[in-house]
Length: 118
Image (spheres, rainbow, N blue to C red):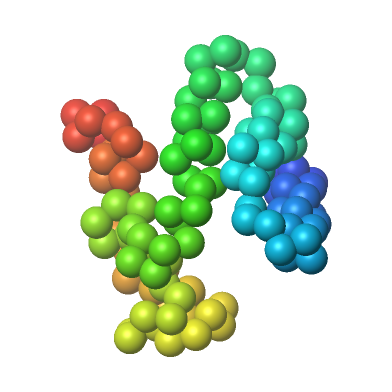
């Protein structure tokens, strides 16, 4: 079971890593980020090999440089609402406003599953 301490440890690692690469003027090492988040922080709680494989697949998909591109979308209509015309800036209220526009029930395709998985 994942909990707040897992999230806090991952956030702390990301802050430290980003500060370190910024200081050294190096790009983010996404292999290290994936390993630390998927195998160390959360992976220790995953006991099933197939679950670990799935979790690492999500990590390789979402913990990448591509997610930082301004036009990135997780799935059509599921964007990161930062610095967009309807959601200027990065204030928490802009994110909340965007989240309220999302459907209450997500399509399975958003998670990479076939539409029959619903």
